Amino acid sequence: MLNSIPDHRKRHTYEVAEILSAGILMFVLRCESRNQADQLAGQQFEQNYLKVFGMRLPITDTVHDFLEQLDPKELEFLRESLVRKLMVRKVFEQWKFQGYYNLTFDATGTHVFDEEPFEGCPYKETKNDMKWYVSVLEAKLVFTNGFSISLARNGLKIRAVRLTNRIVIGATTRRAAFKRLVKKVKTAFPRLAIVVTADGLYCCEPVFKLIKECGWKFIFTFTDDSLKSLWRTINKSTLNRQKQTIKKLPNGKWIVDEFSWINDLPYKDQQVNFITYQQYEDQQIVERHVHLANLTINEKNAKQISEQGRLRWNIENQGFNAQKNHGFALEHKYARKGFNTMKNYYLLMQIAHMISQLVEKTKSFQQALNYSGRTIRYVIKDLIAMLTRQICSPKNIHRHYRKIKQLRY
Image 1 (tube, rainbow, N blue to C red):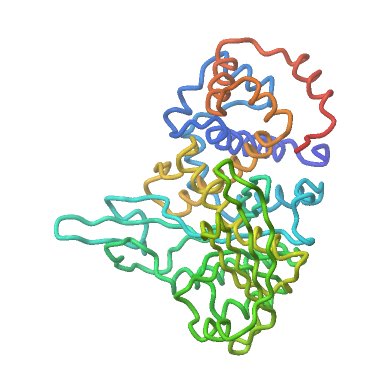
Image 2: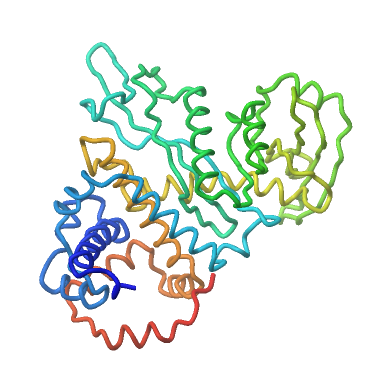
């Protein structure tokens, strides 16, 4: 393919690949700052990097200057292309639910600034201080094996607003961002079969209608204090029930799962289905989850639908929590000015997290990790030490690659 590209375009393509790869590497190796990434640079590390990846290693200032000028749409397209290739290769196939991809939505705060980082950034003002807060609404594919793969995002930058003392993004703002994000995903993946999972904020008639127009399914958390008229209908209706005894505890108590559901509940111009899951320990409720869905519920799929609805927590645990507290340093200010530059660092982090998960969740890696008794952070430190102090043999690396026929999960 490169043979058809003029030499000067080839050089430019390689230079861009080198810069973006260096940015992704910073997150894959959990450097947590641009300064830490630059500390990796050294003759032996750079030589090994060139042998392994066939690329030079630019300093992070070069990466930063490039990201300042790069349109974030380019990295969004790169991320979409990578996810699409994984879908084509059926990497996620075994964890799909009834042929659907579970796409969950949630918002999180990413940065707090003492000075306005970009025009329109939400802020909080007190008597003695003023802070600016950057947040994002993320859409991630989540699966029962723990994958949390970024598919699309929207910055919650609508207009400059004064936040309350609780520093929360209003429901109206989040729903507006949700609608834009849904349209973005539908445009990028028009034929993708999706079941949307999200918290109770999105339990409302306009969202139900939007999901229906997209041809998607949904499973939303349903709280006791929302949609009062629908709750009144539910309380007057007869529930279908399914009980299942799970196990007997050493103390002699029994654990029992109970699923209850109702199909075709009218709500304004829409019809929704209701399902609740309750776990009993010696006849006392110890766990309860309630959802609304537009999937028809029956005895065969009630458990799976409830479990898929609860998968939305993956975006918090395997998604935001991993990126904030396990080395990716989501809340670190890789850029202090420029909304586009912040977007680009965020997108590089999502790509790096995707690559890390694809490696760390393979059966061979998990087996080796369990056998060693080490953590992933410790393994990465060992990898950095090896690249810094030892001479890598390209022959041994290529011989190892040829042995790997397929990554298994």
